[in-house]
Image 1 (tube, rainbow, N blue to C red):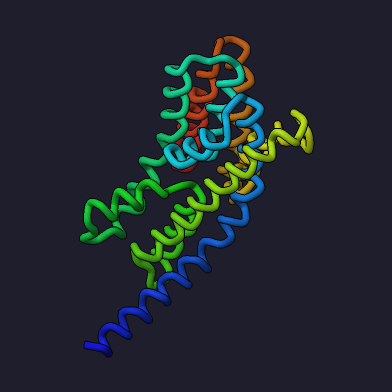
Image 2: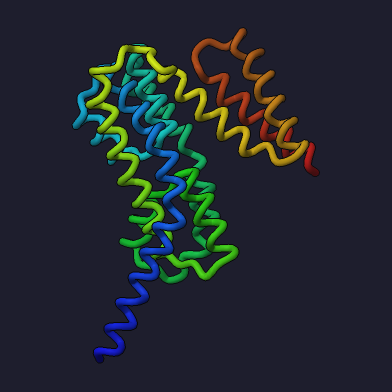
Amino acid sequence: MRVIFTRNRAEIKKAIIQGLTAGWPICLGYIPIGIAFGVLAQKAGLRPYEIGLMSLLVFAGSSQFIAVSMLSAGSTPASIIITTFAVNLRHLLMSSSLAVFMGKATIKKLALFAYGVTDESFAVNHAKFNKENWDLNRALIVNHTANITWIASTVIGGYSGQFIPAGAFGIDYALSAMFICLLIFQLKGRKYVLTAIVAGITAVVLSLVISGNSYIILASVLAATFGVIFNT
């Protein structure tokens, strides 16, 4: 009995260490972006506890940046909800890709894991599931280590915002910089570059004839369709 307990304890310790090792690069990237978001949210009128609550309930960096930007612009709650929902639809595809590795996991564990799926944790866990002896417990550690780091960073940014002037250090450019960084990491071949160019040109053209922000989604769909056709 004692041997089994010791073995289980060693396995748990090993899983925690492996999960933290895989997740620390994500945490390192979340800290500056989280602080930048917290500062922007504070400038938009949110208090630190509201920023922390938003990070806890939403936990989606790009959507949170967009929501804060729309709040600053005076957008209605309905438009913010619809926009963030559309932006986060990609999580359906990411979750579907990870579902094949879940085995006979309980509903509670699946819900806890699904909550923590982000672009970065998906990339790390999907690669680990494909190439290593990875399991749901290790993936959960990756997800929620990143989650805790993100929440803490945004709250710190919220408290720091009162000491940082609006627009200082290029913080108002943080969202654009994050998306440019994500785009660069996706340019792994000619088809990706062409798809990105088509998306950019289409978005600019549509912005001249379509009011609001719907042209972004339409340009993305058209560019993705072009990418599929070009790849066949």
